[in-house]
Structure formats: structure tokens, C-alpha cells
Amino acid sequence: MLSTDLARLYRVAPRVLVQAVKRNSDRFPDDFMFQLSVEEFKNLKSQIVTSSWGGLRRATPYAFTEQGVAMLSSVLKSKRAVKVNIEIMRTFVRLRRMLATHEDLARKLAALEKKYDAQFKVVFDAIRELMKPPEPPRRQIGFRQD
Image 1: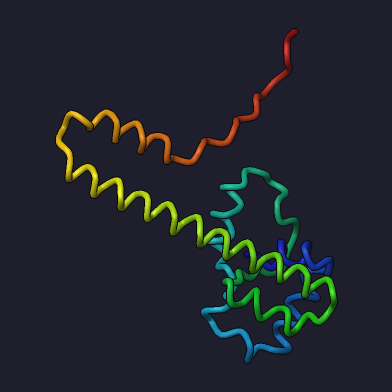
Image 2 (image 1 turned 60 degrees about the horizontal axis):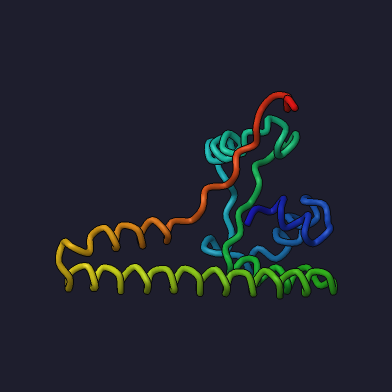
């Protein structure tokens, strides 16, 4: 997660969050947190497609791993920080469960494909199509005409 997003969740200014992290830098090794390069930040901004995203800034944002987010609760000691961290950790757990379930399902499907012959290929293809995540709806550009 980016420092700017975390700051918004914790209801602190991004510089306050970064300051707290820098004061406790020994708690944030490279596998807990890193600063995006200028090129990475440009790529991220281009994917968001909003020219003003991120606003004016002197430095690129920091990216926190799951462990880095967990460590934030020890340096941001407000009640809000604790509650936000609990919810973020629960979200990470749910994501891991979903990924594990999806991987397990894909593995079982592959085993079934090997077991049965080509007559079921259509069925397996249909199941794989159903396993794909839905595409997000696209916003229409222009004016509606009724």
C-alpha cells in the first residue's frame, strides 16, 4: 500500500506518516517498505489515468508491504491507527484465502482435465471462463442521449 493511501486511512498528513517511519527506520527494513523510483511513480500515475493524481510532491511515495503496514501500528499509536491496521490485516488474510482457493480450484480442474478425454474440453473451457474475474464496467465518455 502506498504511504499516501495509508495516510488517508489513518487521517494524518502523508508527511506525518513518513516522519514517524523515518524516526523509527530500524523497524522498517527493505522488505517492509521502500520508496518508489521516479519511473515507477510515473508508470503508476499513467495507469491511474488522472493527471492530477498524487498532487504536487517533492518526493515519490513509499510502498508498504503487509509486514510494513503491521509495523505502522507500533509507530502510529492512535486508536484510529490500531483500528485501521486490524482492518487492513483482515483484508490481507481474506485476499490470501481467495488466492489459495482459486489456486486450489485451478489445480483440481487441471487434474480433472488430464483424467478425462477431449469430449469434456468444452466443459472445462466454460469453467475456466467462469473462473476469470469480471471486467470492471467502463464509464461512457460523452453525453447521454435520451
